[in-house]
Length: 611
Image (cartoon, rainbow, N blue to C red; front, side, top):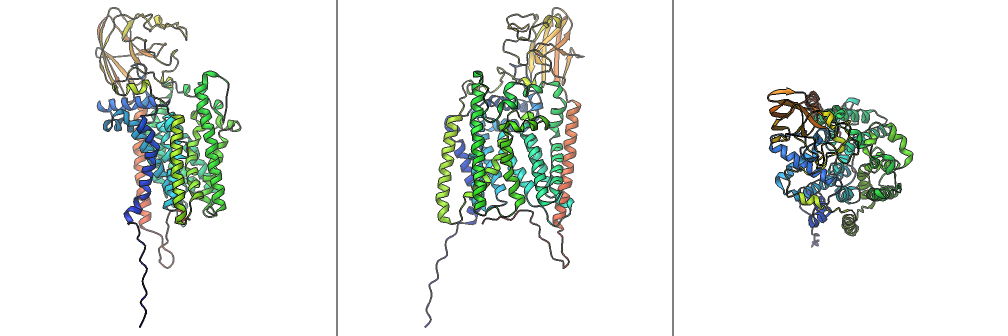
């Protein structure tokens, strides 16, 4: 009689849907932990919070007026306005304005931060999945939220445009470093992945100017290193194609921002002492007590640079010792070189690069380069510490979760910025006209880049010479309330963002000084006839020639030729992108075959080395 053997019960496995969504759910939970101090205490209003919040409110105001892509913000400079939407990329202020339609203004920044941090985790997880299994890749996504510079930006600076680097940079690296078709021609390898890469480049330009400058240099450097390792020009060609098409897609913003720089004082963005690169080297200190807040921020970012570099270097070393970096040198060597380059850019020996490389000084602070170290740090950290035995993963995950909570609490405790008057203005939301503007958006060549609260307007002067000859730092400017030269005040009947109407009666001929900043895109009519408006030299307010008697003054924003050119370039780039997409997909539908008619497999991705 044969003995029956008892079959061992099969180990119960998790359902497939849970395994598929476990990683993303962990990322969403990690982002929630990172913003919990904001949920508990309200927004952290760093130096850039007011700028972004006013941009959201102004963009929503124009949206309700039927303008999807505005150019002029009416509230800054105490109602005189500024062309901030011409020069600041649109992605974050559009996102904030749309979120303001759904959530109360007090919650908009918190929701936006949560979405940006979650996107950071997802993008870094996708980057890590090219080399790692799902578990360590998810750990890399979480580490990118907590171990880099993201939380410092959230709680100390509130630079929402720069926070988009958390997901744009890893996506750029993923598309540039993933393996191209090994059996294809140079053209096929160039086109492989060029479409999504171009979309990422366009998204970066539409998110943040300094980020776009850093991403451009990162893309070029990564392509050159990859080309040297692979001994192929395909990475360089693909990077160049992506950069050109991506920039062309963003031309709807880029062309006006570049062409109209001469209509503003953009140079002030890098001429103020605190924005000069040489004053922000690692642990620099000039001994000026008036710069205490600047030095505090510099010290925090200096220590953050050292900590991030140390974690990345230790992780690379440990991963190498554990034999996890033996494969795919073209993948990990470019990533490993990024922290070294970032550290060098923080030191005075990099000063020639800051002087010679185009547009690099517009970064203002060397520590801005930390945004590109975030992805390598997270990936190498997860590669180094992940263990395959299940019994070792539980304590590892527990320790990492505890570290994430500690980092969140300590960062929010050290860097949290009280909102004070900013948060008090949030319930008012619309209109916001009691705030200062940005000096870099002021008309060039004027004596006072910022319009103060006591500056008058909508009144008539006999001659612009009445307003000239003012000392640059005069305590009583000609248009201030303490020494008004104006008569016959006009009433502003309509105050839309890009359409304004003034009505009144002048008791003498002269110039109507409007409480509106001059800009060449404005078109002015007086009593139905076009008028050649100029500006007064003190604050750059618009000066309209006017005759004695009643007058109806209409000021409208016009679409300038550079705006039309930018739109046309973007449309043409979109058509080209669609054509490239069709060509690439057609190539995938008709794969190559060998001499025996068998299909040649081209995965297009680097094989995961850790399962």
